[in-house]
Length: 592
Image 1 (cartoon, one colour):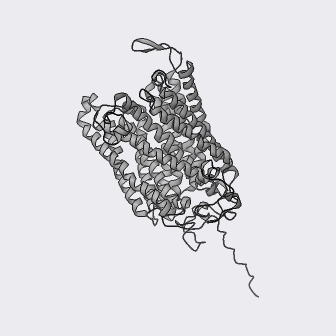
Image 2 (cartoon, rainbow, N blue to C red):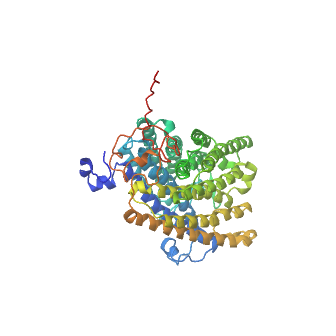
């Protein structure tokens, strides 16, 4: 094992390509995922601005970004291309940003460090899990520019729409490229999930029992289980839709599909079958996109509250409960599909039950904060905002769980508001906090706190201006995926809200300049730090910053859990997991 500033014979023998490109070191792979997802985060944000511009000022030329991305005619968005915009925005943000930055970037980097292992259980499989993302990047990126309009089936790819969107003669259909890309994402994620489960179960340091694992690892572990059991269903469904498109099979194409008064296709399949298969994965995927964030926020809150995490075991059980219930609630996405009311009631009740373990986690975070001496660092600010925003997103989710309410608000902007409060105001804010928190461990340098706080406050203000207003539009029935708000004259008086949201969205994207500058500058010029700048208990903070090959320059042995803050046995207000307990003084018999 190598320490800080040292290089082993093994490392010296590695070429640049094997060290930094086709690396099998979990830390390099984690950073590859991190840099890739941050670049796609920029692309997804620009696509979102295209959507918002169209909704605020329909059919007007979008300056600067429009001519670069949307068309050669001054930046005006065509009706068909608008469908491609919201398809690609959701695809990029879900499959190329949120899932891979949580499981791919932080999962890869942190799991071995936080459990005391020297690497992942299967390093080569780990390398392949990253490089299988590149065919997905290229295929879905190419679909955006495939004639005539790009993939336009929405990120849900519902048939028969997705089965009938065809390309120009002589070119491969954009929707087919999109489906191929999603298939590669599925294989990449399955490789990662097998690796994570095996590593956490088999490679923990001596003394690291399951109930001494930090919540970040519990979040990653439950997420890996969700991926392993749910993802094969989506991957199989994607292959089935591909065969429908490429070979004329009839899994999802109905018999005698009529388009423009003529029979366009005949397959004898069931379009609703796709929805069942898709949501059987994609509802657990909602928790794949937030459970790791919950774990990371738990670690950050405990560290900066300087208190033990309140209710550690209930939090573990609540994460497990959320994951288990997540497998039996997929039908709540289909309340308006004509399902049997008894079945709808079953999905409704099981969905509402998810509020119980979610509330356990929320009250445990509040219990940790209560009476603590909070350090309002940048990671803590993002963590506290995650808790607040998750509450708002969770409460709006209860509305949608009720079938009578969902029938009205389904496919309105109320759904868009809920989804973004959970995934951007929630998960993305947790990701920002985690980057600031673990940046010193990754690069051995500290990000600037002043720039970090400016980034936080601007993002927090403008995200609420963007997404909270969507609840108002959705409550009056304003439909999502709508290109021209003036198609609905009854909503014309609400158009100033669309304009306000767009201005806030532009300012929110612009605020990320502070983060980008801080991140890039700090990699090279940030102040150097030691192993444990935050004075945390976790095992990763005992390794050098950044860790060398093998992670640790000593054999870690774990004596306690990760949240022993304020322990009377320690001289300081934190008690690292590797610090041996003090030896008891020998008992001396009294003299007679």
